[in-house]
Length: 146
View 1: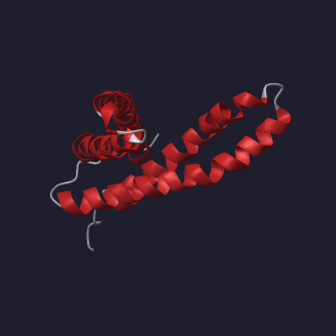
View 2: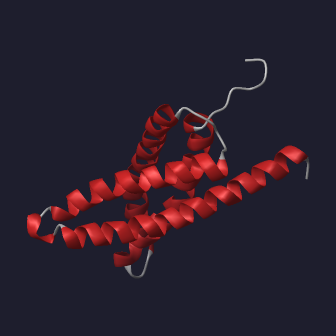
């Protein structure tokens, strides 16, 4: 393994650790906010989801910036790009899920499991897309000589 692939491997490992932590943190935050917003009407879970996602994305952004990609400065610009990359990942997931769910419902003996399996299949795709987007868009660094 050459130096660059060794570096990329550990960068991906750190990315997965930050992302794994943030997935747990984001879900716990959503659950807490949803409980806190219960009296705000029948769509209070949407408030919890929006606020929870903004906070979780910000926490993920800081983890990626400080522990994964090690960039300096550019906090606001990188944060905005980070939001854009997550938006792209969400759109990929929303586009892929209906296709996979439809296919799986016709193939499975228990079609009610199709959405869960489809989401599990889409997860590595969105994680990879997010990693590449964060690396090449949110936290891109100028190469020497640029």
